[in-house]
Length: 365
Image (tube, rainbow, N blue to C red; front, side, top):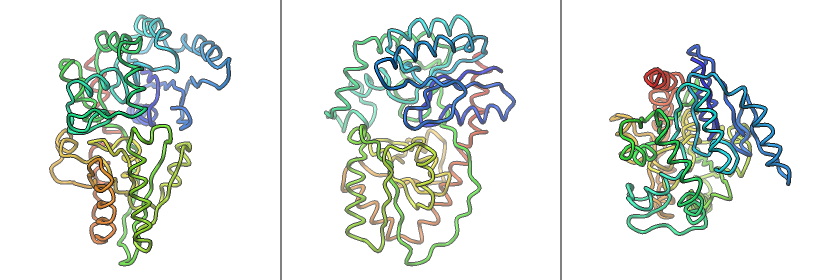
């Protein structure tokens, strides 16, 4: 098959492309590299800073559109699949629809249905937009509601969701938002990760717990990184011989993964039920995820044995206690690190995931 993967979130499409190419498919990735993360791509659609950035990007897209014809499958990372206003994406979507085979919409991140379902139906006990019945009120939640509700972005998302041939969700949460509304076309496929050849050796009895956290400052409060970072710093201060902390802030992915190496545990996604791409990447290296590991995460994967994730509730106390408790359980750290590697190989290996996408595409065709 000829496959166009359009847009990028946290290296999902580039990793999927690796798997699909290994299976013999011709794959093109067109994206902006997910902004400062600068992930690889075949067609660069990055928008440059400055007053002419938008005009220059439009020229680049116009020059690239002829290369986006004749594919069997076009998969969009999001309704906002290019760094343009929604109004400009309507004709581009129509062009892609007209000149290619099937269109797949990715439910991988922020969009209208994610916002709307979380503030109305509230399908989760806690999440990005609610804690129980109470809606979270942060600058980010207010911004996302203003961006996606009763706007061109909402209309674009609704158009694509109803018009596309299939919707694929990469996490349990996104599946729960889309499947009740589009039960006949929504499918869950785990995020793809390149498995690593990792050997987890025994730990020394006095070895400190090496924590790692990545900070995206503009999204810190929305993702709960502010609370996790404060809890980690306090734990490292209170137990300096048992806990060491490394912090990475707004750096490209290659540097991020270099800083991550040698860590025992990563803190990520306080309000999530599931680990997303960054903690999954860490787990493939034998790094324990402290974050989202609710029962629903294991259930959708049909996993009844492995429990490698330290699940925390969205509170400072829960995170602090989880860190201190893990640091005190030296004998469990090695077990959980080994389970983390096994978990990725079993559920997220990029070849396995690519085969699931291959089956989805063949079914659509």
